Image 1 (cartoon, rainbow, N blue to C red):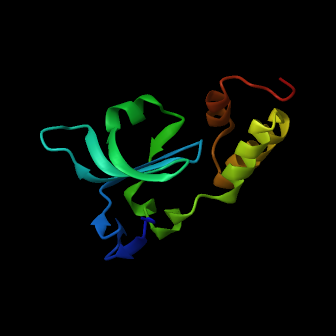
Image 2 (tube, rainbow, N blue to C red):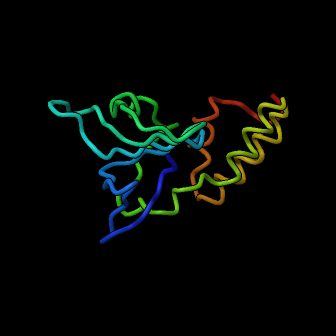
Length: 133
């Protein structure tokens, strides 16, 4: 079943379920929590957009441990524009998988600049990788 995103009353809904929390990653994956698991402060049920869209359970604690590669989406930024992942992620992944790391890094740097992220975040994400490595 294809995930259907809509916004109602200033809130994001996926297939009619209200999104309570969301996370995003440099790898282009998204986690949308629609239900907190009973008796748990960290387990969520929701939609995970990665290689495929899939409903399932995930741990908030594990996502937070992946910072700065994964970060929480601000509530005001949750919106229907998240339905499709940006094409740039696909280009970066294709370049990386084809063995052209320099092009992948340049595309990533360009995207980071567009998003206004600091260079220190990029360096931390890349783990010290420099042009030509």
